[in-house]
Image 1: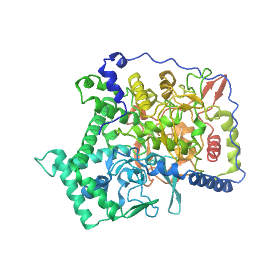
Image 2: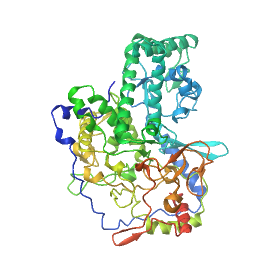
Image 3: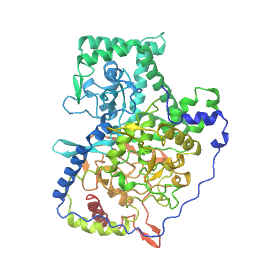
Image 4: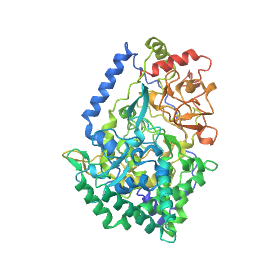
Length: 604
């Protein structure tokens, strides 16, 4: 098992393209557009409780109408033939309960929650399993994270009720901890058998436990679950055990190599880019990740396997730390890119913080390929594009003072709407936020990533989602997709960020790209931004508009914005002038105005 993303870099290195590794002068800054967009923000609903119920019903209907795509978003893995074998995944809390917790609570230690649907597999929401596909191409069931791991979140709406947020943010998910804990588990199993080859020791331990448990409980691993017409009964489980036990040295050996290689490479990246913050990064930060660094670690691991590759390996790492919060992914149609006048370049929209991958299918594919699996299932990315384009935002789940919101709408229209409008792909470089995240893609990474993305999904690539095959990467918005269009040129992505539309912004807390500001109130009143606050709690602060952040908040962890330069709480904290107008960003002198804007934002 080796990372597929960035394998093209090995080819570049092999032919001696050393020039690609050399620093380039800063890209020229783009001018802020001079004309007003004329965007008119939505009106305040007359009756918020009625509107809230209507919006919730619309979203439920949308998910029902797109149930197949929603299933692939939540429960299907990024690969059908690679990843963590299902049997091994289920064994983790058995062989190391001190690391993973008890089997019935598996997932909680790294921020995933249990699937409560009837007859569901005994794995948490956010982990996909290849056996759900009746046409899978492997005898062994594999697992990997699904889109839902990062983008199905939760909020405590009171009375002991927790509501799921589809397309929101799972602020509890700690992807780094999962992989580091896998390494710790393998270390433990190897240490329990000193003198034995590492892979052999781990394999023997897992085989012994799997055989024992299956012998005692023939339905333990799959719990007699059901998906559609597929019944994961004792007969199904017996076939899976037979497939697993047929060549466990290969199956387990592959995953051991994958985990050892990735965690080692990621540690190298931490030492290179996160000096002074390595320990915290390797423990993981729930709700956050350096996805570019994860991808690059897989590329680094691949290059380290050859002499020539080692000469160029450091060049695959981003030159700046790319730690960010997970993003809201609903209403993607409001972030759609557009072609420039001659149709040669995608210059607007994009979806991510810096909009570096403007085409939806490739954004989703990039997320899939982050795991470094040797083969990715393109259907996951294609179904996600179908689902997210029109996926409605969750309505703010609490009450709204609509009279105050009316005042807030006027202030928002005057000071905020010009930037936070749909399909605004402008890269803003004068907001004062740390630019590290926008500088993570160098020439080498971009060239390698473009090659890999097009290699997986090119103009002639076909995939069948329903009845008929389609070509999801042939064209975008009526024009053929070129390799250059897959990732935005550096001058468009360096040194700044997009201002995204604010539908469902209540669920995006904490704010700024690094989640360094706990609530909208603190975003608007920068003089009161705390240096430390609780992050990833599920309770909600309805006054300040953000998840519970105070010291007494239940759950979550303490986030220290002073611990590392790239996660500082600066930015969006000073009034700015553009196009002959001044826009107020600092409302410290008008807290009543800030509270009015907050009330309006609740209605979006």
